[in-house]
Image 1 (cartoon, rainbow, N blue to C red):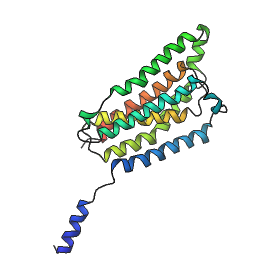
Image 2: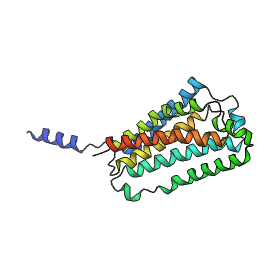
Image 3: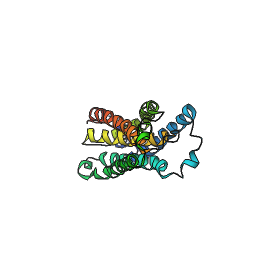
Amino acid sequence: MKTDDLISALAADSRTEPPLKAFLWPALALALAVAVLAVWVALGFRDDLLASLGDPFSVMRFVLTAALGGLGVRLALVLARPEGRSLARLWPVAVPVAAALGLLVLAYGSTPAEGRQMALVGKTMTTCLVTIPLLSVLPVAAILAGLRRGATTSPALAGFAAGLGGSGLAAMAYALHCTEDSPLFYVTWYGLAIGGVTLAATLIGARVLRW
């Protein structure tokens, strides 16, 4: 091999992929933008969206889903490193989960008995359970693709983080359309949709994120 060829080969081997964050943030921003656009085009934003932000119960849909999404992404970034398993902390996820359960109990107690069934089932239960997983596909895929550029030693847990992060952000996008403001509805059905996506991503991550 000629010296110039050897130098070129060594230079090619030394090239590294862009840092994880440099890939993940643009990919995740694009995926979230597509999710919001899909909600707008396919379902439409709720007509009283701005007015609904004056209702604390309604606002909490965005707060809780954003918190779960952000915590999932943060956990994924930690777990992308080989030493991430020892650095990862799951307890922060319990904070929005506990807040959601507290809201559920509060709403149950403050809703008249004759209105609880309607508040729980609502009018868009099926739409919620179908749409959130569909909107989660791109955000979850973006996080998983980012994790594959890292070196996780906990593929299942990293998949869990990807599922939580992607589905949390997708649920936040769906909340732009949803008119069900009772925590009895959104804690239950958003929670089931997020949980289902997270479980699926955990199983996928266990396979695709192995070294």
